[in-house]
Length: 296
Image (cartoon, rainbow, N blue to C red; front, side, top):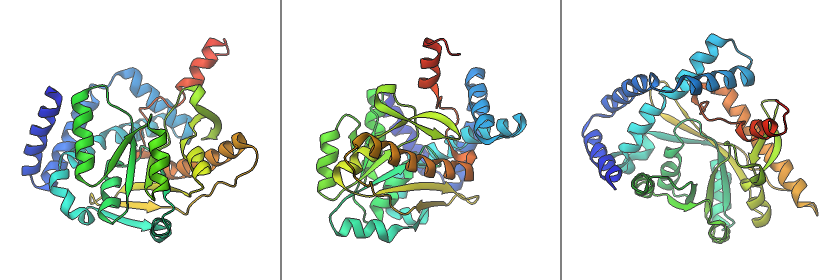
C-alpha cells in the first residue's frame, strides 16, 4: 500500500498550492516525463495521428506530444479533488443536452454516458455529481492495489460511484434504479469482446458495452465529452441521446449503435485531436490477428 500513502501525501502537498501553481507544476512534470516515454511508443502515437488525420509527420509529432503533456495538469486536478469538490462549478461548465439527461433521471429511466479518453475524463463524474446527477463510473481494476484504492477513493470524494467492468449485473440493477452508467468506449478490447466497426476510415475493434446495455435496458446513450479551454476551465458537452432501435437481430442492433457511438467519438477527436490518448495502441488486436494469419 506504499503507493496509496505516497499519493495521499503528494495530494496533500498539491492541495496547499494555488491552482495556477499546481497546473504549472503539472505542465513542467509532463514535459520532463515526455523525454522518458519509449521511442517506440512515441512512434506508434505519431503514426496513428498521421494515419487517422492525414497530417504531416511534423504536425503528427506536435499533436502526439500535446496529447501526452496534458496528463500533467490532469494529474494535478485529480490530486486537488479535496479542494475542488466543494466548488466544482468553478472549474467545469455543463453544456448541450443536459436537460434531456435530467428528464431521463426524473422519469427514473436511467441512462448511459459514452465517452472517450479525451480531455480530463476524471472530472466528468464530479461535475455531474455536483450538478445532482447520479453517476456510476465503470472502471478497470488497477494492477496496483494501492493505486486502485487511491483513485477510487478520490472518485468517491467528488460524488462518483464506481463499479468494475465485471459487475454487469450490478450495472443492470443500477440502471433499473435510475442511475447513469458512465462508459469509456474508445479503447481496444479483445476480439471476443468487441465488434468490427469503421473508425477513422479503418476497420476497428470496438467495445459493445454501451449499445448492448442500452438495448437490454431500453435507455438512451448520451455521448459526453470534456474540453479544456486555454484558461484552464473545462467545458463538458452532452450530445443528444441515441436510442437503440430494437429488432429481432440483437447482433445487428449492437453493431449499428456501436458504429453510431464511434462516429460521435471520432467527430470529437477530429475537433480536439491534441486531447485524445494517442499513445494507446488502438488497433493492436486487429494487427495481432493479421500477424497470426500472415496477412502483414
